[in-house]
Image 1: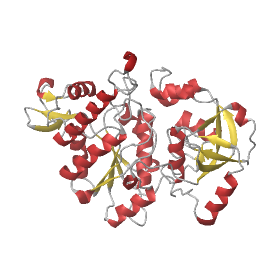
Image 2: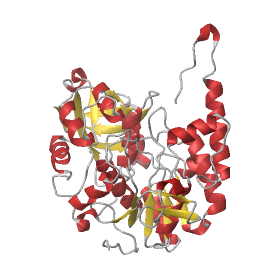
Image 3: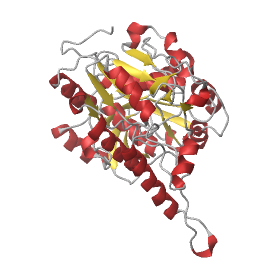
Image 4: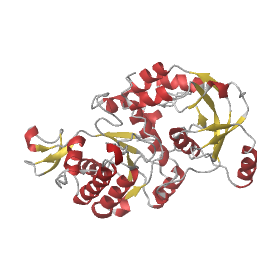
Length: 407
């Protein structure tokens, strides 16, 4: 079992929860100073990263990675001090801007809408090889992979250094915007010592519900922590997913044993490496356990179904500091008459209700609700409503063109 802090919860990754949010006089001084500084405009991914670094979600990072950290993570999946860390957290900038900045200089970090969100003290600027990063992080250089495509579009130099937060990016769901310090206080107030985290970027269906409740038999509480940062255009919109989560939790889960909160990070679609990254982030929120299902953080056919589980064997459990819980594919078995998994069900595939995401979308667009054995009726109705809204947005407009939108 992981080491525990005096409050009974697992300590943050690296031992200390990072807090780089400016307050009081320091905030007033920084707001005055930032008006006269050169500006670095953040894209949505780095805006999310800034929030995660400064609020402790990415502890022990206190800024965007320098070359030594970046190289160590790419090649060894550890920070230079030996602490497990699997994904680069970097700030790409145009080479022309990088050449004007010297180590020690301050820059303003400006959000997509032009508002100063943070400060950065430049430690260094360094070039990188996108092909090398793609191979190490995503296991492929195929531009069909969304992470590779994003990497190829970004500027050619990384700017490194510690950061501070001046203003939070707008939170689409303020009641779900809980920082790690806040979730830890909530867990402690509820008397939770063993907490299992669940990552999702999709609505929760019966298979998810099944493995969450199996895990909940082992621990004090479930931390349902959907990723609400930037995702692919064809992923289910965050607002629709949140409505589904609320409908499900309000009727089918014990209220006192579940906490729903937003994970503000961007989705990387890095498969195995991102599974470990997601686990570390939930450790910072106070989780002692983390659910890893099939193809965690995968996309398309770039990763094997169990690659995101096998990768955990490459890390010292003590240094990782939380317990991964591995689950196989879950489904409704008509012969068993209930939810089961490949590990527990002896019946053939024909007896199992397994619907692909594509098939579910086809059903919803045709006005057919998936069966209750696949997803709860309340969730199915919300998804169907969302699909109708999407279909209306894609109806032909003048000139025969279609309004752009997701799948």
